[in-house]
Length: 313
Image (cartoon, rainbow, N blue to C red; front, side, top):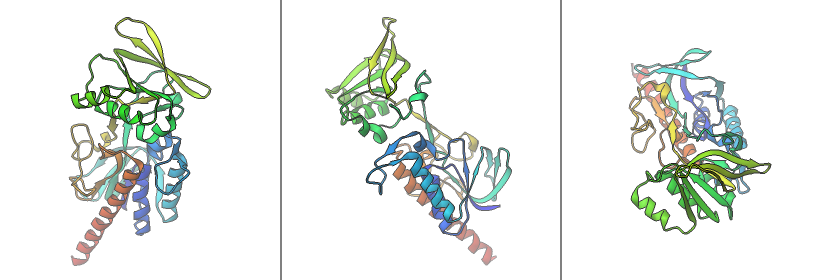
C-alpha cells in the first residue's frame, strides 16, 4: 500500500517523484520498457534551462532519477497491464509484481512518436533521424533536411526547420496534403521548402557519419530515387500511452488524457496526469517537468485532505 504511485518516468514522472519524495511521501515509480522516456533517444539537449553547454538526454534523465532516489523515491521496472480506479485504494495489476495499491496515482506514461517502419530508420535515430524539430533542428544548421508527413504538424515542423536548414524537402506519399489550407499556403510561400509529393519512403540511407538521404518510390512513375539530406524528420503523429487505463480516464478523441484546466486533475479524484500523455501542444522536456511538479503538488494536497478527513472521523 502506497500513498502515491507514479507510472512512467521521463521529465514529468521524475519531477513528480522529486517533489513527492521531498514531501516525505516515499512514492513508488514504475518504469516501463524505456526508462527515462523519449529523451533517452535524443543526443544533446540544449534547451533545458541550467545547462549552458547542453546535456545528453540520458544524462539528464539519470540525474533526475538520482535526485528523486536521494530523497526517498523507490523505482521498480514493470509493465502495468491494467488498473482499477473505481474506488480507493486504486489497484494496479503489474506484470511479475501482482497487485499494488495506492491512495493517489500519477500517470506520466508519455506519448510515443509514430515511425515509418522502414529499413534504416531505427538504426539512425539520433544519427539524423528525429521526431522533434524543436529538439534537434539546431543541429542541422546549414544542411539539407527532409520532413516526412502531410498534416499540420509536418508542415509546422518544415516551416520551423527552415530557420536552420539550407533546404527542407517535404515528402508525402499522396499528392494531396491533410494539412489545413492556411498551413499549406504558409509553407508554400517559403522559398526554402521543396516538395516531393506522391513519394513513398522506402529506406533511410546512411553512412558512417549518419543519415545521407531517403530512398523513395515515385508513385506516379514507379521509379525509385534517393533524396539527399543530412536529416530525416518523421512527422506523422504520436499516440499517447493510455491503453492500460481501460477507458476509465476521460480522454480526447486521440486518446490524450483530459485534465481540469490549470491542474493535473483527471475525472477521477486522486488520479493525476502529467507530461506528454496529456499534452497535445507543447511536448517539451521543460513543460513536461513543470506539469510533473503540478501533479505532485496536486497529489500532495489530495493526500492531506484524506488525512484531515480521517482525523475528523
